[in-house]
Every structure is written in structure tokens, then in C-alpha cells.
Image 1 (cartoon, helix red, strand yellow):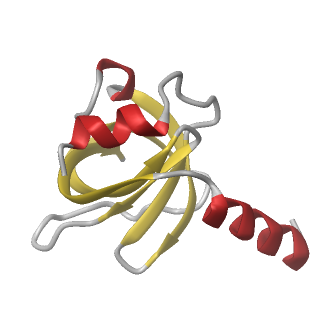
Image 2: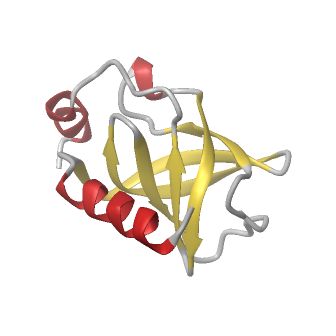
Length: 112
């Protein structure tokens, strides 16, 4: 994917409706370990997560397979996905197949 494709994908993601979290505890399974991780935002196609301080994570690289439990709805448990990008403490996981629930349902389940 060239620079222009990355830019277009980033712009598309910015205008995509999302549900935003504030310290919502979720869980990530990667490298044969399950660890708590904080949900930053989620939309039907993926989720941005932030590593928690003091938790030992394996290296998460672009393309790595992970399983998420966002701890929101039954539809957001055991979500298989791939790391689409990782920078610093933040990771974005692409679900591949969009969720069947809408953004309003996701936001409501967070209770923020």
C-alpha cells in the first residue's frame, strides 16, 4: 500500500462513526497470553486499544493475529482480528468482518 492509500485509509477512518471509551477495560489475547488492555474507540470494523501501565505485553506487530474481548456485548467477545497498526502504547485491530451491531449500541454498552 502506497502513501496515498495509507492517507486515504486514515482519512476514511477519521470520519467513520465511532464509539469512544474512557478507561473501559477490555482483554487481548496474543502470543499465547491474555492481558487487560484499555479500549480507546471502536467502530464496526475495528478497535483502537491502549496498553496499560505495568502490564507485560508481547510485541504486537502489524499483521499479528489477536483475539479481543471488548467486554461490551456478546457480539464483542472473542473477536478475531489483525493488528493494522501499532505506535507507542496504542494498537489498532481490524476485525476483517464488520460487527453486526451499530455504533450507538457500542457506545450505550460502555455506559460512559
